[in-house]
Length: 77
Length: 137
Image 1 (cartoon, each protein chain N blue to C red):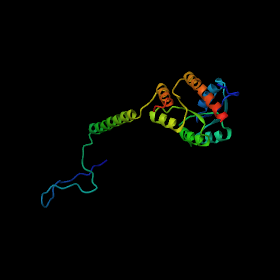
Image 2: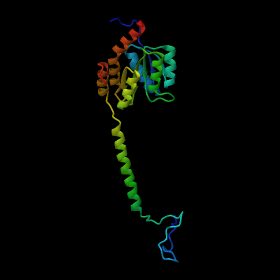
Image 3: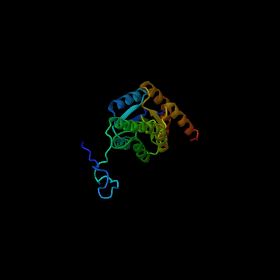
Image 4: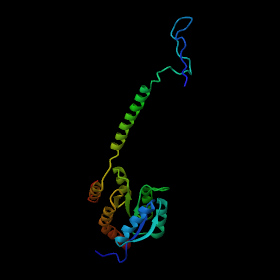
């Protein structure tokens, strides 16, 4: 992919810094380590979300269900 | 306590044919009769209405109509229906929901086959008593 860069960076008339032309990609580093780091951060975030999701849904065993049924039959809930 | 003079009639609903076979085999080994098998919730409701079994064993995750929705419809047809949920769904919310809807028992499919046999055998006297009550009503 070819990056479009801000050719001079300053206005030829007044010398003020130029903002990138609309629609042009902001030049940035394509350094693979930076991209790799971003993916790792996303993966870490997803892992945290997954653990949270799994903890939010309380799982039960057959023993828990047995106790729950006993409680319900005794009128407790 | 009077005993039921005939075998308990059971409807088994599960979308997995091999699971249905295992459940049906366990049910027969308990001396009950499997009157029909259903592959989804809608079929279970239809067969329940036609055959009026004493007990229905329902999976939850089934295509077209889920087992918990089938449970609600079956209980609307017959408020005395005796339903046993047999499912892999092991979240507390699902268990509470099914019991709130009117399921009598809840068995996890994650148990080993011999444990499922034991669990069904354990709830069988209750099912027999309920079937007897239903017949007397």
